[in-house]
Length: 370
Image (cartoon, rainbow, N blue to C red):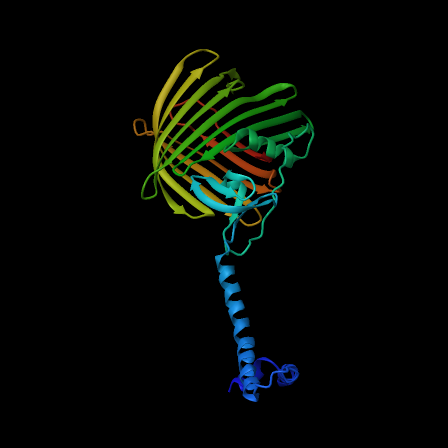
């Protein structure tokens, strides 16, 4: 049986060669008391030893391998590796005892730990770069990054519209606008400033400075509150060929509900109380009124990076019964992340209880977004 087992481990011919060599040595021995069964017995011992000893050495080697400590590896983002043991984590600081450098304290964001027995992961090498401020006349994208770094979490747009027409008269028109806005989980704040100026045959026909703000706070159940102050200084308003420049201040305080709240489509409706104050800068005098209103707002994102916005307000003075309305809608097409084109239409008619200019306006805008 022993011989048959060994043949599976060692070829039969090699066992015969080894056995014949041992028997030849024993025959040459001068001792007469050596018997053949001693040779047979020695053959069995030799074969058992050849079978058992490799198994013992293999088991011992495996045990020693299990006893050897497998080190952790500290891998820096630039590819450097340090072997040792991870001792503790103190917040975002790793305490690592290295073999060569002793105890190290390293921010966790700067390294990766490869623990014992863990498969190595792909390391992305980070190369430190020094930001360079954009030079004057650089590309719009670089200028946009500069404004983003300057304003931080605030986003906005600079827009301009201009035209010069020469026929029977010479007319020139200019509009410059700047907008800033920022959002929080439950609040939205925006500010806008605008300057409109136009001349006909060197006679100023429009000279208006406008500004408005918005603070919208979200409440439960899709409700929200809104506060919208606005300011208008008209320095070229005439009525019956008489200069009647004015300053108009309006404050809107309202409550509304978000009727449609989707990622690409929002509709808001609500009611508000409006407080008007008007000052005549030519002849002096002050007037004020408070007027109730209904408002509706819509924001729609279309394919091809097109955005549609509209705000409509209907005024109704309960005390006098006077009515008025205003509407503004705008279609914006983003050409790039920086540049955009827009078409805006505005109309205002018969603001109740307050003397202010009615107008209708259609403009083509070139915008710079950041």
